[in-house]
Amino acid sequence: MNILILGSGGREHALAWAVMQNPKCDRLIVAPGNAGIAQIASCANLDINDGAAVCVFVEENAIDFVIIGPEAPLAAGVADRLRAAGVLVFGPSQGAAALEASKAFTKSICDAAGAPTAAYGHFHDADAAKAYVRTQGAPIVIKADGLAAGKGVIIAMTQNEALEAVDEMFGGSFGDAGAEVVIEEFMEGEEASFFVLCDGKNVLPIGTAQDHKRVGEGDTGPNTGGMGAYSPAPVLSDAIAERAMTQIIRPTMAEMAARGTPYQGVLYAGLMIKDGQPRLVEYNVRFGDPECQVLMMRLGAQALDLMLSAARGTLDQAKVQWAEDHAMTVVMAAQGYPGSYEKGSRINGLDAIAEDSQHMVFHAGTALQDGVLAATGGRVLNVTARGDTLADAAKRAYGMVEKIDWPGGFFRRDIGWRALK
Image 1 (cartoon, rainbow, N blue to C red):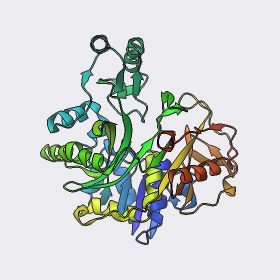
Image 2 (cartoon, rainbow, N blue to C red):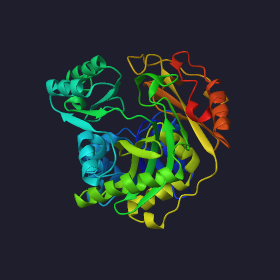
Image 3 (cartoon, helix red, strand yellow):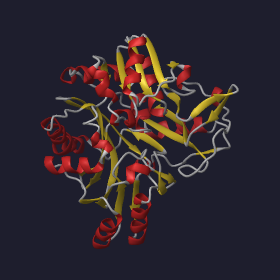
Image 4 (cartoon, rainbow, N blue to C red):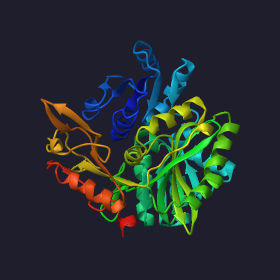
């Protein structure tokens, strides 16, 4: 079959790599793609947020199946346009994508479903938000309501930090995403990512992971889109995962269906776990990035079969075959990220890395410039490895990192520290 993946990051490179392992894939196009993706698939220049343009491209290229990677085209209703055109698509509708596009919407769903989550307030102006902060005290969590590329969350440890965060969000630092603000109780515990596939009726767990949001070692500094991840997450035991399914995931899916917006695609639940009890931090309506990289390394070719089952409504007939292994990805980012950074620095050394089912470098922000690989984004490379143990995977991943010659980049040296200690 002919398959189109929408997106250009490390997540989409990992999805493309997994799809290419499956003999069902005859032809793969990724739009717009990146320099790494171009080594394994065709890339196309396409506005992936324009549903009409995507539909035209699908028809012209005889595409049988579309996988939508990032959240923006989902929030823009691209999946709806494709389904209306009779195209098989993996990704939720615009209405269902509100689970990520609006944190206030997610809170309302949790309230209706009785799903355990943090206490919160929802605000449209800074004065009311600040009054709430002064009443609640700190630590407290300030969130831009809309999509902010994974960066619209500030964990304020003092009241002054929280008040400054409110001003920052309403002052336009996160654009339209910060026009409304959700302020949450600070939840203690250990955070983990739980991934399930949904077909509108059936729900199938497909894996767990933990990522590292903070830019600095020891989980310090500002939040980023993610500096590394590993799978599985030891803290998310089978018993806790089943509690999450029973108390959070299934009630959410039932409430979404009851509202006329059944959910189809991957649902990524960020969970805070304390004393064996999971509480919802947030939902994302796409694979996490960089969690997708470790999940795809462990799932391999079956990832395509599972996504097809979700799109076709046959998840009740699907099973996940897990290898008893571990995977880790280390993000290499441009100096200055998540703040301002320069683009165009040259990257060397990738030719010295042998890529196979155990070792892969997934590209995020890269492009070929005059025949030389250059960094074009904040998060640039995802150096990923599998191993029999997490320690084995870490040793392999960091061994690959050491072969990469990129003075303009940096990385954390402690990915997986919670599990490894």
